[in-house]
Image (cartoon, rainbow, N blue to C red; front, side, top):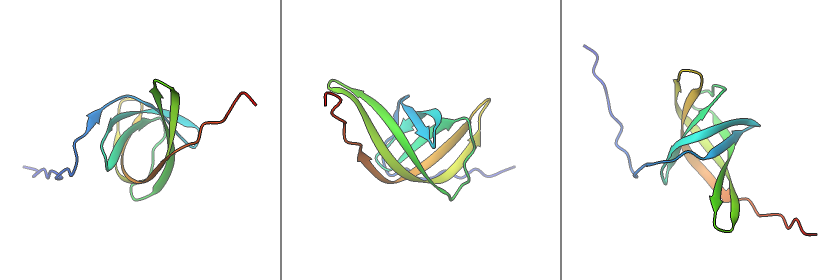
Length: 101
């Protein structure tokens, strides 16, 4: 019998599907918390590696883009994609460009 361990979560997760891009590879989020994010993408990532990715969010004032850096803490092979559990190291809102100029 295999003993399964469970990690204690430090913050609640919110299930949400938002567009995400890692080096031009498109994907979606599966869930987000204050400290981490789970991504579904078409290319694998190495656990322990640092990745940079963009997350897009629609708001009443238009689309917002967050630039994030994260540490890959776990990966999963899904049916046709890869799941990437990521600890958020940094995140900032990308400034909107004034397209009227």
